Length: 431
Picture (cartoon, rainbow, N blue to C red):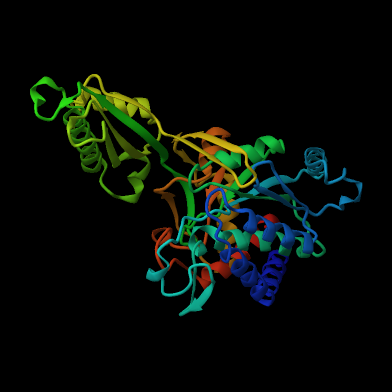
């Protein structure tokens, strides 16, 4: 189509011309030590960037940012000091032109980089070398965050030339690394958001991620009878009982691996369990412990839950009958002081390849790259646990960065993938 060719050429032209400005934004956010609960500097940079580019942006009570890229004239909108009413008017305008709402999701927080001496360069400085951009968060996921934020600006530039029927909402959230879905849920509820589609910018090698397994963090506990270590015959060791729990978890994991294998097409069928740490009490070398716990992290196959997994452990893997289990609950504070309490159990989800949203993202990719994209299932957890699992919103992932580089020393993203993401994110709302 002639119109599509004009649009694609314009997207390429703008993104190539303004690429260094997009890189500058990425450099600025990488410079922030935005550990979970400490994202304010990163949030301030984004707010300043959106203000300079006439993109309306709001901060919720947790500290996450909502930015809006639409073709509307905002002169008739309510005052921006009343975000909920402002967003309400946005939805009214969107309905008048039969526009869809697409959310771009990225998190501002990164994992720590305490071992500075092990990095080749300062982890909080964007360094270009051999076609890659190095720095903490380049892959997970400030590369996508900067590309999404800048694409919202490119979309505004394109509005004067092309009509679009997709409104972009940028949800740039806090604390995803410690509680995926929590801040995304809060920004949805605080601004009363509704969405037709959600695109996650988590690293995907620029392949389309169309689902993920569920996430589970749980505490498994055994109890016994305490005694002095000189008379262990009078005790019932909680640690020995916990050893049986560990064996059950290991056997379950191995059986799942044997049954489904490691092939990508079976990712959503296989549940994984891993014991992350163990503890016992009393913490004294003179006592036989009467309490022991294992912290277990799992990835859940579609349809599985903590209860179904633990019932299977009891029925088929000799789990001690009096073993108790419960969720791990994340508790903390956002940088704005909002308290956090988030249960770590989330269901898996999948968006089919014949969905309209998949076709939109796939066709946008093909228009820029010239070939069909690869699609896959993510092995890890994302904010999709809220948008897809809880809200039922069609959700996909597409992000620069190799998943295996997330959280690593000398983390990097390919520069060509960062630019590619910028172009595709800019094209999607018009395609």
